[in-house]
Image (cartoon, one colour):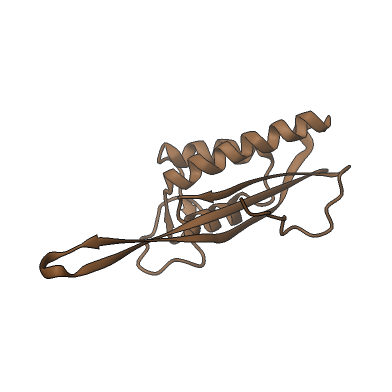
Length: 152
């Protein structure tokens, strides 16, 4: 397995706590939009937000990848979606971040997410056999997600 380093600079072990997921089979576009949506929120608020996204009550505003994305009636959201699979995985990452902070002895009520980084991971190349000896490529891009929280 390759060695990974964190993208967040100026990490201070006394103030920051971090967690990461590597090479998950979720959409990097959905994960990026969720990361921008929860950045600046506390862990509890971001957990409630993601749970309401999974229940289709609130939407994630799509700001970069918004072509052919419909408008939502959620306040403050023009283009948006309900990325349930990515929200479930980031919810697991939030639980990991919280347990890391608890292990360090930090106050969980004062933690705010200061950085949410999403990168494309490895490309898994496959193909689908088609008629008359042809084949169609089926590529799957894996995703890396990193969260950093700071005690304020």
